[in-house]
Amino acid sequence: MTRLFNDPAAFADEALEGFTAAHRRWVRPVTGGVVRATATPAGQVAVVIGGGSGHYPAFSGLVGRGLAHGAAVGNVFASPSARQIHSVATAAHAGGGVLLMYGNYAGDVLHFGQAAERLAADGVETRTFAVADDISSAGPEESAKRRGIAGDLPVFKVAAAAAEQGLPLEEVLRVAERAGARTRSFGIAFSGCTLPGADHPLFTVPEARMAVGLGIHGEPGIGEEALPTADEAARLLVETLLKELPEDVADPAGQRAAVILNGLGSVKYEELFVVYRKVAALLGDAGVEIVDPEVGELVTSFDMAGISLTLTWLDDRLEELWRAPADTPAYRKGALDAAEPDPDRASVTAAAQDTAVPAPPVVPAASDASRGAADTVLAALDAVARVVDAHADELGRIDAVAGDGDHGIGMRRGSTAAHRAAHDAHGLGAGAGTVLTRAADAWADKAGGTSGALWGTILRSLGTALGDRDAPDAARVADGVTEASAAVRRLGGAEVGDKTMVDVLVPFADALAAATAEGLPLTDAWDRAATTATAAAAGTADLLPRRGRARPHAEKSLGTPDAGAHSLALITRAVHGALLDHH
Image (cartoon, rainbow, N blue to C red; front, side):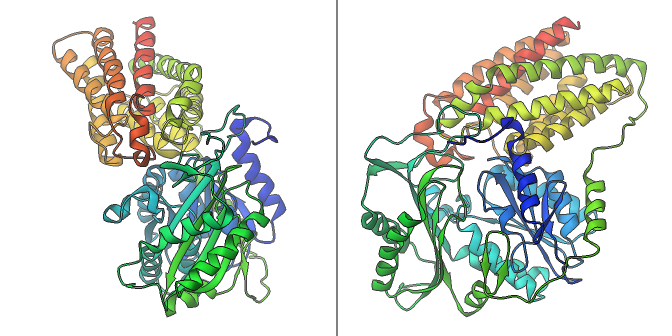
């Protein structure tokens, strides 16, 4: 378990602070993460990677010459926010465009996509690529839905090497796409990981058993088998991966592969070497030529006891890029000439931080009526933060049944930050719309992950609908909730029946719109809609997830409501209480 921490909520920030203090030769801190401390040639494509904390050396440890130009670092097991990614990419950009790379998780897809849009609006040519290498998380026919695990490293590495060679952005992206299409990973675990401050691991494995097909966010495996010997574990990993070759590889014999045997956090290096001796022998028996293998902790999951095997099937070009030198805090290969620190990096870093800080402490003009409505908005956000805090542990337990167990933590971070930002804006005389939009930005920024992006969207949609000009009536509030429902579906791609928060948001919005159309006052209309939301959340227990981290563990979630749906239902009822108090 994680024993050394101060405030668990500050763990990720403090870890990043210590990391940068220890590795100033390679990295410099910027808002949201780190960038190279050395100069990047003008016009070179900047490869910016990122993801949640808890996976070191991914992602910050992979920043340096020959690998990433920057890394955006989110909270524990939560994607960085779009604002963090934008900040890091702005600092890393050297005029040749930016390639954003990340593991294929819903929160990362949402936030990196939003960051790409912001960079494009700034005039920075940007592309994105999600690594999807975990064969246990989806079948070959749905490979685009697979998670990114230790396959991140070889895909990041070859793309960055292509950028170092001066290739233009589209060609660097094509290299990433080819490497991604030829990378497969599979893993096993013997115990789950424990988040900082938590009393129990996110999942447990029975004595003398192992979980098969793991993720890197504390998700349980897709099945269990008897605990193997080291050689049996090696055989399972190799044979599983050799069953699924890239489309243009008919037979492993005569092929070359980059091989990574990855430790998830608490498997000793000596154990890894015992396993690798058999991995190498089995691949050799299959006729595979191993190229520059890596054995060690490369993409971890706190203290998870587990290992994964990754094969990237190489062609001549990919082999050249895989063998290319790199010099980062946690990954070094070959030899590079000595590099001088970038004399302009400090000013670039400061500029990036300036672009990423919240809006200055001034607010748009607002009417007295809208400022009065902002009182109610602030009370509602206070109620949201309190109900989330009271149920955070419960939300984590629900989420851990088939996910990674961090929903309560993320919701607590987001709702607390939203209330704080709303309080500050309200104190400056902001109207209801501005109070909500400031809260939206804070929620998305501090929570990260899927829930951060979606709740930021919900609050921003409401803020836009309410505005700062006059007091909103019930119909305008209902219109804002309806737009929030549509925006969440557009952004996340989920629909009713997928076992997500959408299963509550849509019926809640529809019920609120119908009740206000009947002429009910807002408190009564909201009460009716909140009752609908509670029933809809309970109904998600009977659904199988079709999206998100719970999808590979669909059967395990039967009988348990979706955590996001449950938290939304709790929030709608808490907001009703605030509306009654300010009626």
